Length: 339
Image (cartoon, rainbow, N blue to C red; front, side):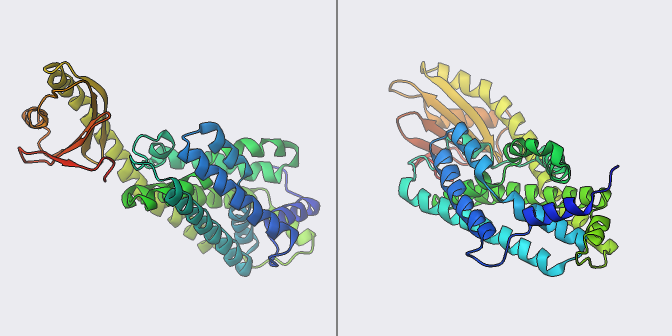
């Protein structure tokens, strides 16, 4: 493997280490692009527009301080590590705040329950960590190798940083705190993966030796740094494992509930529009003309088919939402989108 030269290390530090002054070119560029990316991502999520969200991914500059943290770890510059972490944290909080602001302005009546941009970011799994590790590796590799730097826009699209934070802010405004935490976990997963893979790639390419040749300040690299980075990845992997198991169970629960719901709807000539399961909650969308089949009959049918432990939310398209808790034979009407 080719060791990077002094010029390459200077290029990397110039690209990743944002200057301290708020009015410096790199700092104003970072915060300006971040605010714009947050607005674009939040608007794209609210409008359920994939193209708009992708645009926010390309604009977002959060990858810079995250990879900068990895480079600072390799060069053993503690102050720079802290500065990069503060930039990532401050930037993340800024995006969440912008998402909350937009959420207060245009909060939908269904609390984003039917929004595909939201639903795709509130169930992080181990596969997301695997994808983030691979994408982070490509990003660090493209930074080291100037001849393949044209792949960075693709990396920005593949690694989701700003959209999950925008989703977190939007969900906080509609009091979906658990789902907001899940989207924040997706962001944390991507950050941990980028730092871990960036650290390994920079070490493998001999960035420390290149920095010495460039007469840069290089601290003593200790093994605990790699241990700490590995521990962070493992720490993130734990809830992702639980999420993977939960998603598998929810899919199985939805598959079991669908034929039961379809038989129930057929008694009143209604139609099942959707059957989902979220954290053990069965959510069924149904449409048709009055009179509707009794929700309690569906609750009983689910109980008879071994789904007694699952709560039921029955959403009538254009009508009310019925809530049928587990282990009961009664259903109540509640506000749609409540979680």
